[in-house]
Image (cartoon, rainbow, N blue to C red):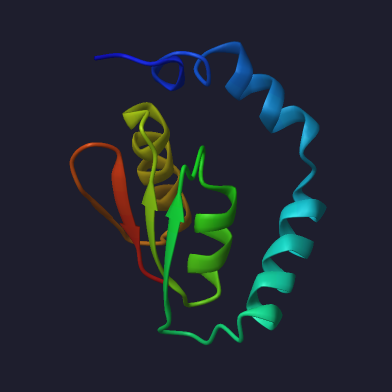
Length: 102
């Protein structure tokens, strides 16, 4: 059975969202998460509905083991491709699941 999430967050939505969220916001949000949750390298985080992975990738760069899940496999494939470019090793799963190890 399909639902709105299977198509709504695809295409133009992805492009627009990337353009309106500045990198500085991601940096500040991740710094807040690290401090608030007292995250240390090696800790594990589950990023549900991770989208294109701005938080998942940034946390993995800080040494956090992230499992990123999204219902759109295009997002997790994109995360995998971006991680390979940035040498953050991803481990792909099925059904839109990616594990990132910092």
